[in-house]
Image 1 (tube, rainbow, N blue to C red):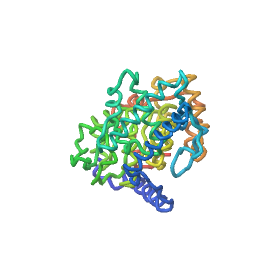
Image 2 (cartoon, rainbow, N blue to C red; image 1 turned 90 degrees about the vertical axis):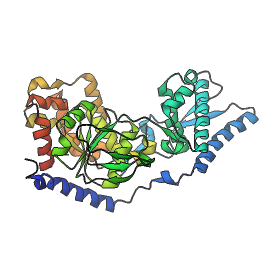
Image 3 (cartoon, helix red, strand yellow; image 1 turned 90 degrees about the horizontal axis):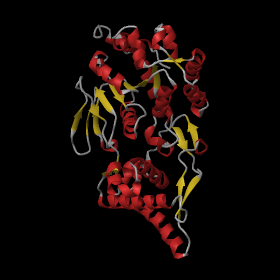
Image 4 (tube, rainbow, N blue to C red; image 1 turned 30 degrees about the vertical axis):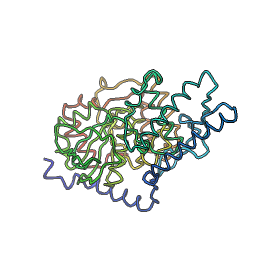
Length: 391
């Protein structure tokens, strides 16, 4: 069925691609300065921080570290070409060495600076997990290490990969895609039944080969596995599907960005029709406050919302027992999303979210199975893609 009308299937997608490519040519390219930062420059920036501490001590003053505040909306601005980016004069949090409440954190930051300095100097790499196990007593939890590495990356204005710190990926990818890892390993994502783990070193990926017409971001692993089981990539070939298994890790976001930079094909998001799903899609498209300092490498403002749209629930007459009432928490999340700076440029998204607020219901992608078990793969997605049902 797919083969005979394949040309018709991609007409709207090809139109969207032409539009997106045209916009890319019009917009000045965002300079990606990651490659320009030499290892000497990184070492020099760390040395300057340490020099500041030594200078304070030599003057009999208590050293203080100033970390950019990565959790405040006041520190970010919205640029439609980049997403959420950190302002240059952002407020900072002072980590004092003479305060009982922050002296431990001061020590943790210095320890991680030491580890990073040695890694960059010796051109070796470690995972955030390695750093945590280097001194579990000092750090107390993996989350402490994760946050401090991002704080240091923000403070030095250096992408985390350039600090030689890797993170284990949780994302999966499948479809019409082959590439080489930095060490020369050839990765083939075309096996229909099994997905490939997203690389831990996206910066090192080269020789990407793909004839995919589009990339589809899938919010949840369960939906992603269902699409694999239903052989979605073969039915709607050629395409690529990727999941960050919920809130995406940095590697999944870097991979989506890498695919956009390399292939310039439409990127669609398939998320639950609920505030949480919408927020996850916004992270891929516009970024997050916490990682706004690295927006240039992480965001893909061209992402389109394919589904599940609140308006789809009415249009498809999804059975009422498959719908879930909005909770107070959902309503608060929805209100907070509607106030975000990037939504003013998305009237169609606003309309969908207002409809959710009005109907007071949400639905998971799996709710489509209440219409028919194979409805998602065989009817919903092919029709959406054929007739341009994205916003």
